[in-house]
Amino acid sequence: MVKLEKTEQMTGQQPVRNKIDLTLPPDVLFLNPWRDPGFRMLGEPEFIWRPLPNARIEGFAASAHPEVNDKIKQVLQTARRAKRFRQPVEYNSVPVILEKASFRKSFVMARDRVLLSGASGTRAVNRYRRDNNDAGVDADARLEDYFETCRENNAGKEVPIYSGLLEPDIPFVVECRNTFNYFHFITESLCQLTMLDGLGFQGNIFFHFPNQEDKQQPFAKAFVDALFPEYEGRVFFERAPKDYSRVLTAYDLIGGHYQAPIDDLAGMNDLLPEPIAENGGATSLELRVSLNMNTVNSSLIALRQRAHRAIEGGNFDHLPKRFFVGRDTRFSRERHLEGEELLFDHLALFGFEYVVFENLSPLEQIALMARAEMMVSYHGAGFTNMLFAGPQTYAIEIGTLQTAQIRWGDFWPLALASGCKYINFFGDFKAEDPLSEPDFEADGIVPASLSKAAIAQIVGLIVTLFGQYPDLKRPRALAQLASEVLQVGGAEHAVGLLEKHSAMLPTSGRLCLIKADCHKELDEPKSELVALDMAHKADPGRWQTLVRMIWCAKRCDRPQVIRWALARLKIDFPQRHDNFLNNHEWVRYVA
Image (tube, rainbow, N blue to C red; front, side):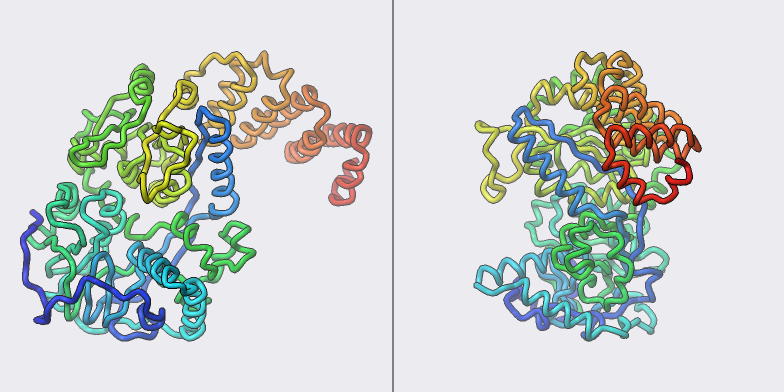
């Protein structure tokens, strides 16, 4: 079992103050692994970063107020256009040895310099910016100069490698943001223990945290016990600050992203959203938020793999595959969803059960997600468990404009690591004035509220994904639902929904185009061409439909359709016809 009592692993010095002077110049404050003493990797990393497969991450506006929906849609559009990578990235994590190490609050230091590693490094940079900007200093300009100097000076250099034997009593030490927030502990701290895999580690393990000991929640100890039983009796939780002469710890290479030689980032610009790629690219400080949203640390993937191994052979047939997640407020913040009862009443009709993660063991939580068909809940740390989901899982979160703005991207790496489908509906604020945007510093995260229309929107998507297509009376409602189902990866069900309402299609070019999009997603070009023909007949005023028919007919090897569409384009849209011929020489041979 994990021990909570204090242990004496000090260097013999008095504990340092639990404070760091973040107004120091960056070259004095931050550790440069390529040049500064006190930092050595235990071995050469297999890779620094590499592309990852994409996951399905989507969000939809679900407010009862048009002005709020407009704001939500703007946030979603910005995320898709300017923040989402063309392809996400896995950054490696490696074990390192630090000399004269200090753990202060949730920061890690070696020889009095702050190590920029993972979330801890992100917090250090954010705190540096805040403290210096408050003091009237242009922190970003200082950081840009510092990181540019690092990249230049580190060119052609390698991070030093430790060449000695690993002392049997060297401790492995983990910094914690805290030990009461499930998200931070699992994603930032627990995953670091995977760095010990294959090392034959014999020493003790220490988790250091800044919060009061009585605020620690049981999950921290329980997950260590469940997933790392080989370290039984050697794991200790202690409050920071703490000093060590030498320690083993984890280093997330993403922390050195801006310090690394420019060659280490070769190829990353190709993965970035266009606005960032064209304005500084991989070395731009404007990339910080997007980089964290689109990056998975290898230790997180390793934790997921370890968790799945831990449930192999277990019998978890008592766990549901469709479930709504509520909260036990004894262990978490009270943040109830307004409209929860009505939503669950509808979900229960389709086999959903009500679960509370805190009432399940760690292995049950892992198995629940690994086997899940669909999870539904409101915004909270419980979505950390997406890490353990399978690619077949739909994780549907209910949030607000506020969570879309400041929290949505925090959970992207968990969906990217598991490959699950992470879908958000952003509703209203549970507040006296739902049109007033809250101040996070004063109000924290404000709970969500769902109108009856929002509940219908959510349930409509869910039941359609289950192959139970609702009867809709208006083409507009049909178009919205079919589009949402297509966006979340349910093209075959969107086709089924549209075909159930086939009487609406001949008079709606929009519905026919959605159907064409579905067939394109399903790689069914002949069916796509039929849907495009219907779209043109329903709305002959769109030249874009004719151009798309030409391309689709080319793929289907239908030259007669290409000739017909070109002729129609020439009659109805002569300038578009001429432009198309001038830009695509191959068309002349078909025509």
